[in-house]
Image 1 (tube, helix red, strand yellow):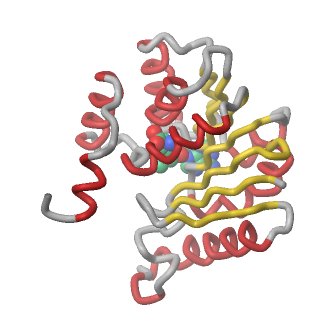
Image 2 (cartoon, rainbow, N blue to C red):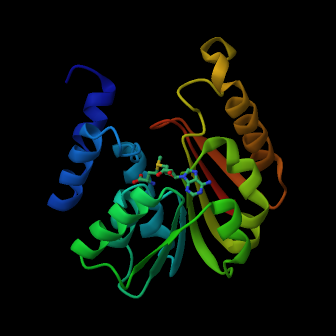
Amino acid sequence: MENEKEYLYSLLPERSAFLKDLRRVSALSESYAPIISRDTEQLLVTLLAAKRPSRVLEVGTAVGYSAILMADNLPPDSRIITVERYKKHAEIAVDNIFRVGYQEKIRVIEGEAAEVLTWLDGGFDFIFLDAAKAQYIEFLPELMRLLNKGGLLVSDDVLFHGMTGDDGNVVRRKITIVKRLRMYLDKITHDPALETALIPIGDGVAVSVKK
Ligand SMILES: C[S@@+](CC[C@H](N)C(=O)[O-])C[C@H]1O[C@@H](n2cnc3c(N)ncnc32)[C@H](O)[C@@H]1O
């Protein structure tokens, strides 16, 4: 092994042929949004195995990779709602979900999450937040309403390419995103209703439990 990251990656389990292909195609296509990193996906799968949620909410579907990954690792009667504002991504996700036969298990809602979250019914045991990073702080009140007590809120990319934790890495045009991500992290680490761990894998993952 050349380095520790390579070693840790070598221990990650293989995913289905469909997901492996989707990851490969996503990396090649400029019109696809980035998908969850392989170490973060294993954290997600591990948390799902511990929690066994019956209702899952995802904010930020892209082409459906993480939604399909979660569906692969949930009990058969569990349901996922995933929200995507970009029509082209939502359409590709629906097609991918159909191709793996999960149309009963995963519902894609095309729309702006800030609006969709306001009318969704609560009762989610698990929320995966992976949308525009500057909006995490705006989504939080609705996410808290939607999450059950004891439920998990997993927020991806919170370290934002090393910018959140280090002013020296901040690119000028990303300053607002970084400020808003810092507000979000401050909130979820100090809110007495949450217990939060910040995990520096992938691009940084926050795992919060609603108390
Ligand atoms: C990083 S990608 C999601 C990757 C996906 N979770 C995966 O790992 O396969 C972020 C996606 O969130 C969508 N998005 C960003 N902000 C959003 C918002 N406010 N409402 C709905 N979708 C949003 C983007 O269009 C993009 O497709």
